[in-house]
Length: 258
Image 1: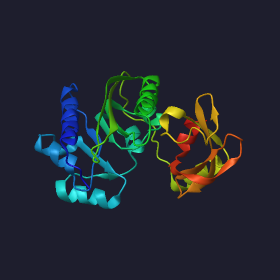
Image 2: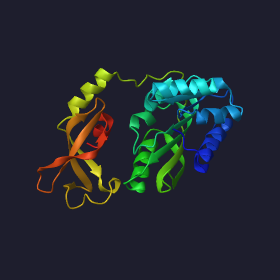
Image 3: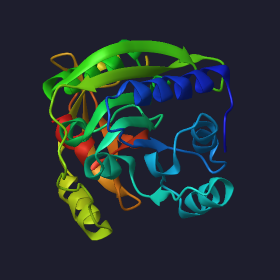
């Protein structure tokens, strides 16, 4: 599904400008596209050659739709994996989640990176600070951070633009994990304790969750599907809450919040 808003068009124009300011020879744009090939068709209309367009989507049917509508082959792949295996001029991760693994920044092989994250129910400052901190540690220089309205007309999305200060590599070790590897990684995380900064969670946790050094304490209690993990709160008396949280974590999230 596509959400054609003035902000979304502005984002595409920004990516196009970053593509043009890259010195010759031009390198591809790697980006998440929807099943209507909205971004791909925009870039084609603006004169970007097909060979410089590398759309990706988690859904195989969406990738087929992109190719049918635009004539540009799309890759059914997780955004993080594509980020580390493709040398590109611009990497646009329009992922709308609340965080991205630091490994994405560490292994990104691009001149410019544009990231959009959701702040729904969380502190925008916390989400921006976490992402910017990870970027800086991995040699990225942040050029811009901004907030804007999402499709619900609420200002709950942030955009971050950064440029790499590292030389681009011809090849980077891929970060593709098999389903079996992910299942094993998830199972190995059960029982671990995670500490999430209080500023990253919405109000309502204060009196019902244990706090340690400015962070809420949770425990990983089970797997959720095959790639994510369910967590439960630790109560102020150190007992475990009865209900699982409505959100889940990836194995990378668990490592980051330990």
